[in-house]
Image (cartoon, rainbow, N blue to C red; front, side, top):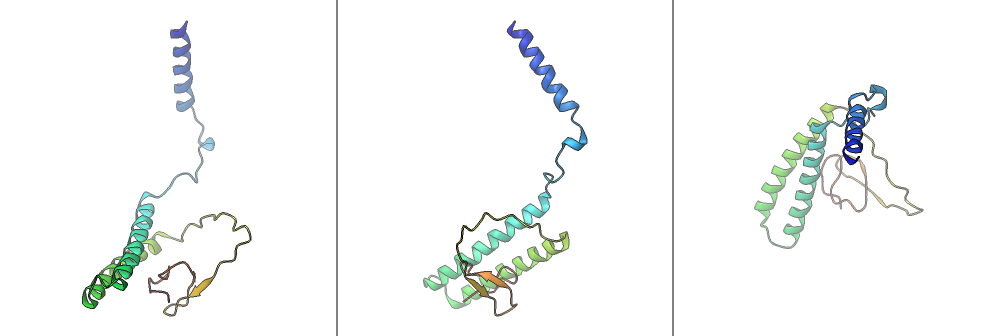
Length: 130
C-alpha cells in the first residue's frame, strides 16, 4: 500500500513539474546574475572604503598608503558603477515602512546627490560625506 502511495506521489510531482504552464511561472523572479554580482561588488567596495577610512582615522595607515589604497578602490568602484549604468536603470527596491521615523539627509559636496546621514560615502560618486 505504501509503495502505491509513493508511486502516485512521484507521478503527481513529475506531472506537476513537467506540465507547468508558462503563464504560471513568475517573470519577475528571473534575476540578472551579472547585475547581482556587480551590485555585490559595489557593496564590497563601499565597505572597503569605509574600513579604509576607519583604519586611517585610527592612525594605522600613513597618508601615502591611505591615498593610494583609496584611489585604487575608487577606480574599481567607478568601473563597477559604469558597468551597472550600462546594464540599464537600477531596479527600485521596496523599503519597509519607516513607522514615523525621520531620516536625516546629507548632500554630497562633489555631485550634489542627497544621501542618508548614516552613509559615510556618497552613493553616486563615492566621495566621503562630512
